[in-house]
Length: 310
Image (spheres, rainbow, N blue to C red):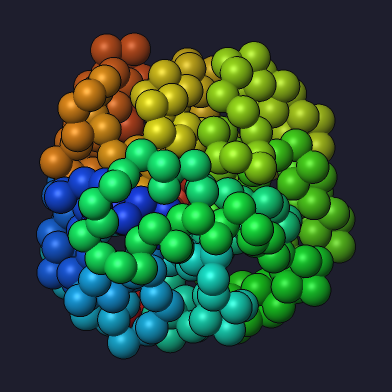
């Protein structure tokens, strides 16, 4: 298992808006279809958000999640991973609601507060498809995405202790690796850890390739390589370059329309599956084996799809 690469696909997220790409899914049936296609293309883990079916605005309503989660489970063996990050404008109750309902094998878990800003994207567009989009982006310049230690303890209590869910620990800067080390020392979580390091979000780590080595060395020092699985997320145009470099260094990879709307320079991806196919081809050409969903379950000590409420 040590040599297998877990491919995660993040299907829609809460960063991009419908104006930016006609291929960004927001209706439940489209989210389900793109997730199923991504799993068939080689994704072992599906990272999922919900959106308002009428206008694409991010939302945390468990009823909307349940319009696509059962279909994905019925059609794939992939690990379902539900966000607890939700959206910058949701409180913790809203962010946890879907995972509490579905009791998934995995959920994302942000390792600290951050000035998570996507306001610069609003300058790229003049004609918006929906009236919420421009202000949604602009207001992030003054927003703090809150994740205090009290918040973290609540996530653990409600999902790990209450539902048997394990986590994709999302780390946006070096300090958040130390936050994870703290909650590990407090015995709030236990190995094996799945650490998703995120590059390219304003307010967090940049996209300098050298940072990959520094992040890897820091995680090795804090956790011991045998105690964690490392994964790499590169935002926007940096996606394929950074995840490929990370895979060469022994990491796992995440791609999908949540993280980048493009397949190559100037070419919009028509689905997350197209990005999955591309990274799987690159991994194969590097002689790296791709983990199946059941491989990922063993590597991450997950409880199994039959233990969820989906």
